Length: 176
Length: 110
Image 1 (tube, each protein chain N blue to C red):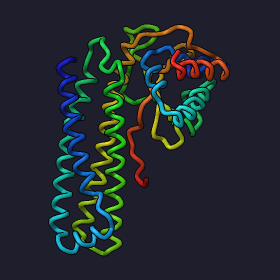
Image 2: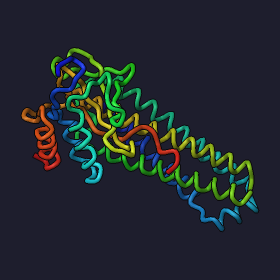
Image 3: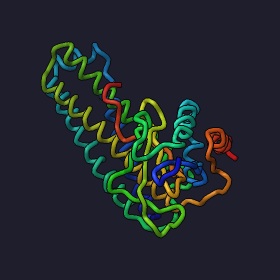
């Protein structure tokens, strides 16, 4: 799994880079949308389409990584410290931001009665951001389920009444 | 109240569950704590709708009691905004909690 960890880290860094680049480009204020769409709607639509295709390539990479993790049979945890999990959580938050901003941009384009092609490009980016989020979440769960299969167990964290269960959960969150 | 589909005991001894539960942010943790406690006495074949509890189709994981066996895994929602969920196996009436993590779907109208 050591090799896969290196591949995972590299692919996630690439995915992050692409996602941040998309986020910068969809963060236009309303006045800028008017200017951009007035002067170069076709070019903007082309750029958004290009970004959506790049993100869709990343989705394929992450899907392949998920398959590798699901097929991994070794009994060592992949993410014992939770480092990859934290990275993936940031990627999920970012996918939500891109999704929201692409929706907002689409709304502005339609409100200003600008290019239909640009609105369609926004639609495509919204759909890709949602799929990206789904791919990252599935990857995250593949790692969690793998690690859970080979996780150690601690006795004394079991209960059959609500009070017992709440108490054991409080002990876990307190770091006992 | 007894039956192989009813949760009579909850076990949080899995170290991956403990790590991921302990890492939840305070606002999520508050809801997660309540959702997990609500699992008691739930029939997994007929669960209350608010938990969104279901088994993962086509997916099996190692049994806690006999790791050589593969058994069904269930998930349920930890938060009302459906952003977080948790997984568990059910063996002899005990729900063995496995992990907490993000939900797949993005909110389509944020």
